Image (cartoon, rainbow, N blue to C red; front, side):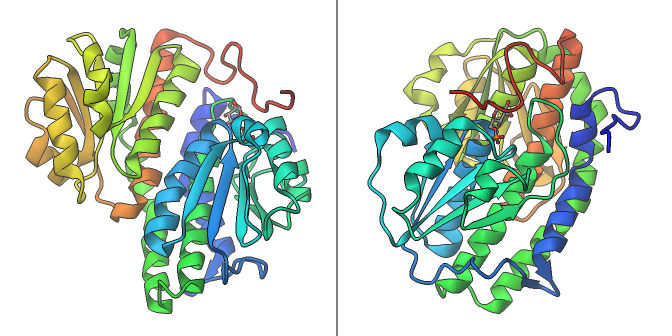
Length: 364
Ligand code: G6P
């Protein structure tokens, strides 16, 4: 069937808006009555390491999932960029799994990395959107993310669906390794089930975000900061923005601010802080205050409590709904995507087909 914009101005807008529905579909596909229904081959018993390999946005999904595998399942996890992995020739153990994440399933470097890992690891697992793709076919187990066709070059719904499937894998790893009880797993799944509703709430912030984006469109450089699993989301936020608005943006771990990027701060540099009110909040706020002390223009994206405690003196704040801590990277992807989208609109750039970029990079 022909994919249409269904009344939206751009595919990207449509795909951002679809997230609550496709994410609910993916969750329904992989769980029933509070229990996981992942395919049989997904058994982490005896697995001592997970190596995740991907490019672009899919790589940032892996970087978020690393926190989950380590924290939820106590399973050591490496994340690599496919183009580095394939030529570095890393030693791999036959007790490890290699996980390849790719929307298209055809990214040349990711496919080459998969072929390198074959015969070296216990299992080749892929997390893909296109189920007929080369990466899906060449895996021992392939998990579809069920995002539906993604047309916009800047990946949006594939990212949040990749994250959801990776979270389900981390929960399964926790169960198989005896780190989680069935009850714990059930509680994690109940948390995930909140996401579609929370995402709808976050989508409702579009008008507010578009007002902020008009100001961001004037900037030359923008920094994104986050800590913990929000750090890779800062990387993704910066990637989205540069891909479609062509504004130079960088994501940084909040704690690295003083090791370089703080030198860039002045009153012309917007700094977007992605910080739900969680256990690391205070730390991030102190980094944020270092930015404010140098006249950096802070946009704090947090929940009601975070903004109440730390919003004073910020250039702008954006109040997100409360979300279970671990799932914040999935929910906060929405304002990151909307900021990029509306900034690009304000600049008049081609949102769905940004210059120089391809949806799928099938040559090296
Ligand atoms: C290109 C796309 C990105 C995507 C990356 C990896 O750069 O523009 O949106 O994240 O490739 O693609 P894949 O299909 O492997 O996820």
